[in-house]
Amino acid sequence: MTSASRHVLMTADAVGGVWTYALDLGAALGRRGYRVTLAVLGPAPNEAQRADAAERGLAVHDLGHAPDWLAADAAAVKKGGRALARLAARETADLLHLNHPALGAAGPFPCPTLAVTHSCLATWWQAVRGGEPMPGDFRWRTALHEAGMAAADALAAPSAAFAEATRRVYGFGAAPLVVPNGRDPAPAAAEPAAPAPSVLTAGRLWDEGKNLAVLDRAAARLPVAVEAAGPLTGPNGARIALHHTVALGTLGPAALRARLAERPVFVSSALYEPFGLSVLEAAQAGCALVLSDIPTFRELWGDAALFVAPHDDRALAAAVLRLLGDRADRAERAAASRERAARHTVDAMAEATLKAHAAAVAAFGTR
Image 1 (cartoon, rainbow, N blue to C red):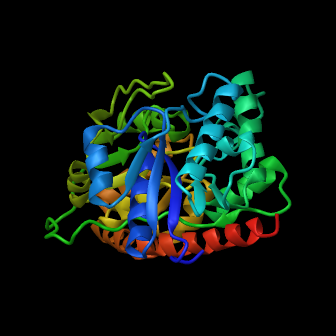
Image 2 (tube, rainbow, N blue to C red):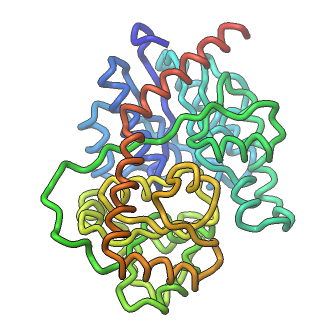
């Protein structure tokens, strides 16, 4: 698709990383001549979020339906999909960028559709719960997600590791296209002479896949503060209690950037992570990384990070202590992480996304 057919309708929700992704990508597409409308599912954006979207030149339309992970049943998801199809027709969208693939289970859309699977319950369940049988509400959500991915004209995922996991779990003949996420680093500022003698993590702390309990146990073994930025309770009722970690609550973008600029050791003990925007932001800020040894993190961060087994709180504490005690190693790994992070800018994400859009347009033309 070229900017001559310029209206992209993109689904978003105001909770978590998809909102950040949609705003960054939408603004980047806008700079390339496209008009972008965000169709928002779930809880409505707050005033600050709406102002941010408007400042970036993005129109916001509240769809009035829950995303699949908050919907009461399959019928509610399909109803949301039909509402999205009507909106796409009414807005004469040239392309639908579907960040919630399950909505595609309602039937075909009136324009080319790129579905982006940012995460899913089936791959989450396999990573977090292993061989346990999925509960019923996971099964119907998984079936809708699969149907929506299959119905799309093109399918993308944010890392090769997650694309392969998607192909394997759903039995697809080919893996989704890989379109890595991107963030732009914060404006350059004078860095402190020495990195902070502390530890930080950030994200949806309530999500069991983030594995915060392991970091919390490791915190009891460390002589420095371990801080966690993000919500402890999710909109689906999930929650976590932290006993040795300092909960900072949900920090706004500027506050989180300020914390990262102090260059603490940044830790993610996640069991499941399709990409990891918070890790990217930490690397861009010059933080040394201690990460769980999962395929996504190996792919993205190579030998720049220290890796530990996801369930081993002793090894996690030891890795943090190693960096705290070895300034040269910490500085070297921070520099290597920042170098790798330079690949993942918003502009790089936008260019890769446009190629995926073109694949969707070409496939739509053969329907």
